[in-house]
Amino acid sequence: MALIVAFSLYPLLQGFYMSLFKRGVVVLPQVPQTLPQYVGFDNFIHLLDNADFRVTLLKTVGFVVVAVPLNIILSLSLAILLQPQTRLFAFARTVVFFPSMISLLIIGITWRWLFGLNNGLVNYLLSLVSIAPVPWLEQDTMAQIAVVVAWVWWQAGVNMMIFLSGLTAISPDYYEAASIDRTSKWRQFTHITLPLLRPTMAVVLVLSSIEAFKVYELVVSLTGGGPGKATVYLIQTIYDTAFQMPMKAGVAAAQSVVLFCVLMVLAIIQLRVARNAK
Image 1 (cartoon, rainbow, N blue to C red):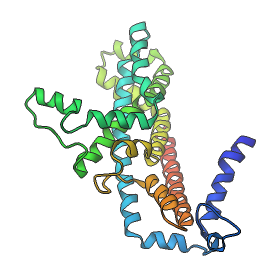
Image 2: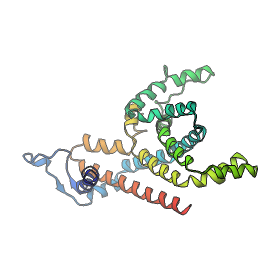
Image 3: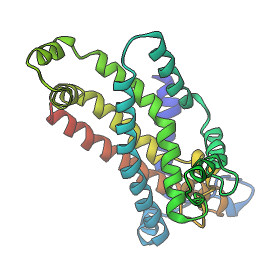
């Protein structure tokens, strides 16, 4: 409880408190210009009038809407494919899970090399089948696709392990009874596996959505937010507002509060939908 209060609850309350002030990151009592000035909810009103913030928020939501379902499809497919308990499949699961243990900065740098226009491995492989080089990091849409691909690849291993635990908890008796009735594998998947995986699916959906909303290190090392501001998402906007603009830490705190509220509402909706679907 002490750790939760110190590292979660107190920073959360401090963020709410900071959002009510006009202030910088550093406050020096001997420098009057840095002292916090109480502005109430002006920071939140400023966000409502800020077109750039609204665009960034919608862009972040769009990233979540695209990346999370793709990640769930990939991780669930990997979990089903690698479910057999043999040494070979155990090794394959380890290989798939390994990227999730690597720093996102390293992941971004690696994919930046893979997506290189003239010397990237992806374009080299495309050239082998007579496909022209793709400007992955030079065009807005392609850069966004590149971020989605790298994030889905990084997150798939963790969610695969969660789905594996859910699959292991399903009794084999259901599948044996379905096989006796000559039920196809697809119907077994849609009528047995998916319904019994709903609680696990809810957990994966909530955790993946939170991670997607918090994407930052990967974007900074992969695209730097470019080209232009095509891949600048909410966390990077909060960081730039707080640390690169004078006396804007209160605005950044207000942006963080908005992000917290979005994540809380999203988690509540997803958990209730999953509960009602049981």
